[in-house]
View 1: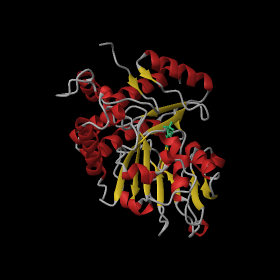
View 2: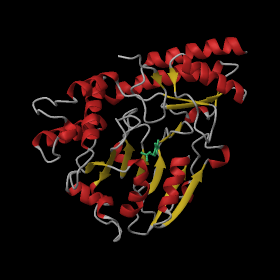
View 3: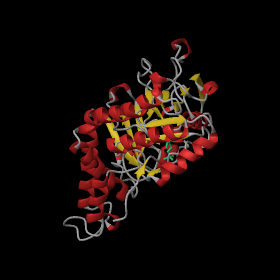
View 4: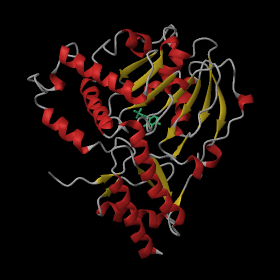
Length: 361
Ligand SMILES: *Cc1c(COP(=O)(O)O)cnc(C)c1O
């Protein structure tokens, strides 16, 4: 096998090697099936078992109660920006949004096409370097839901405390932090995540939705964009992303072998601490977000000049640290450390950063 690099990509991102190897072994012939999962009918018993096991494992890993439906959909995280208002903005035709980055901004802009969006708070003025403090008097008690992005992939912030929205259902985008830390799902009406950051290859979107929120989609909602249709059909209304669901199931098994979400959270906290502790004492590198809101998954940082940023990215790449270039709207660097990134990857990156600092001070 060719040498694998430490891939710090924000998404699609690193997957556990063990899982890739298992998928490779089973690629041509899924056990006892005589065919690849890619070639299998989505109505077959074998596939049904794959789907049911993936659902059961996610339910166990996230402690999802029985009154929630787990859906495996297509269209990426971005399709949820429209599906959420079409399906949930159905009583008073309005919703609260907190703008903590590009993804929240896009979600709010899409929702505006279907109803009234109330921006409760935004950290846009300071390039989204923190999670804004909320003033509950700005919450609309008649909002159909309250929307947040739990982990801001581009800017590297995360919510460490959830807003108390009373009877207004909380809706969360957890695309870049699902299964990376424990979360109380009962605080949410709906939680979703595209697969390509922590769960598997691009192509599946997981939606976890409380049953009582289903069934009141706007009249014009296309059938394929109705949660109730997918829930009634157990994500088999049409051909689902079968291979993606299978692969995600392998990742769920891997998470269980690591000791579950709580165990991964501890490792993720250690990985983040290794990098942030270094940034805090470095005289050359600097983290770009407010300390208390730092993400465990995505750590943006900068050097004093653009020239040094470029030099660092180039030299890092030559040493096998890939995809450290920051998002085009922020510049600098960003190290994404999803579940599949081993501690050793972060330790080696920090060693390299120390060496770079010595040589470039
Ligand atoms: C990546 C990402 C998205 C968009 O996902 P797509 O699958 O590319 O549509 C949305 N929200 C967050 C937080 C993300 O990290």
